[in-house]
Image (cartoon, rainbow, N blue to C red; front, side, top):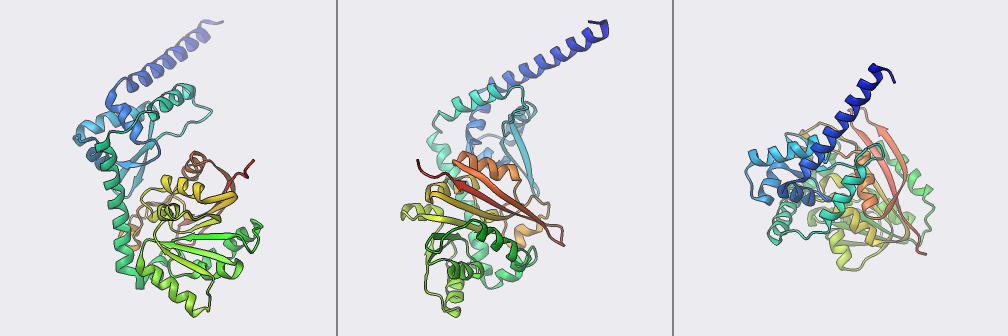
Length: 333
């Protein structure tokens, strides 16, 4: 080995040791381990984490910076807010085994009851923001939604994906957040038994009126969400979220709910926005999240025990992009 090659090898080795030391330093702190536990499946903003951990923002930011530098957490911008989540583990990460082992150990620990209560409060506040918007703007929903996307922009592609699933007419179908019932009425013509779930009573009433106007009687409407559906022991062969997930306070939990609600061999179909930076949709359209990365949806699906299926992406004239994603539940053995 030449002197130059030896020097490069030594420098590379030293750099690797520095990174390894940095990783272990990041893990050698009880508060930072608490943060990793909190981010097990959720994304939280800095102020939300300050509330949950009862810590000053300046102190928390110091710990988050260390975790981010070590590749243990990642950030995403939601308008003027920065949200943190655990970094997704990849095969190319030389320290994946260490991180995976630590995550498993951390996840085995119970959260502090006071923290659990605060997390629920944060999620309730997020949900209430979305619910308040729909209760206030039910009559203008289609107009406001149309600022981002019209149903006709992706209608034909969505139905092509639906037909490609090969579901029989007698299969049970659930649509979460049917809005004014556009898709719900179409599903009722394809399947014998359809259920619509919506947290907003006003929006549910509008779906009901759409069904009456169309002369459809094979749809059951339930005031609630996937948590309510689980409590009522509902099940389905197909669950659909049509431009709804960005209104939901905890997408990761929703994936787990859907995995529990799906019958073996069932499918979860999501029509959703790709990430964008149009913060005006929060106030104008009631969005909680500015779209989702492909990897985020796939990560939540994997954690819920679902398998990633077909993916389609449609660019819109106004700069937004829609993703149509299918996730499958395995057949029972």
